[in-house]
Amino acid sequence: MKNDIHPAYRPVVFRDKSANFSFLTGSTRESTETIDWTDGNTYPVVDVEISSASHPFYTGQQRVMDTQGRVEKFKKRYGQS
Image (tube, rainbow, N blue to C red; front, top):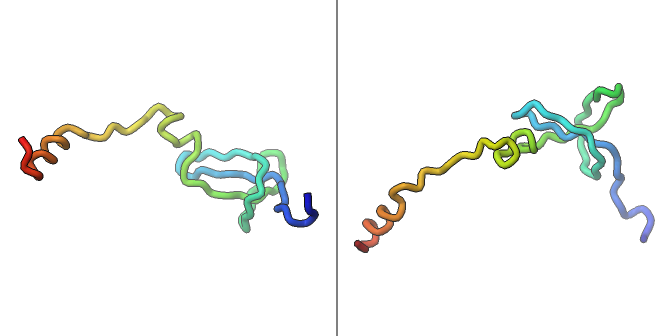
């Protein structure tokens, strides 16, 4: 492998503000913000829109879309009976 072409791999905190959930893991992701973690160290923090704490698949709170009437609306619109 070539030297000095790979990004730095270091501990980073990923924060899901919608679920008030954070976790510390290794990453190459860059961030200008920092956070004081529970172990007393300061780490870069990256805000994410969705995580396992807020994703419907993991929480079991999936939204069911109302599909009733879609086929009938399509047939009515395009003249099929």
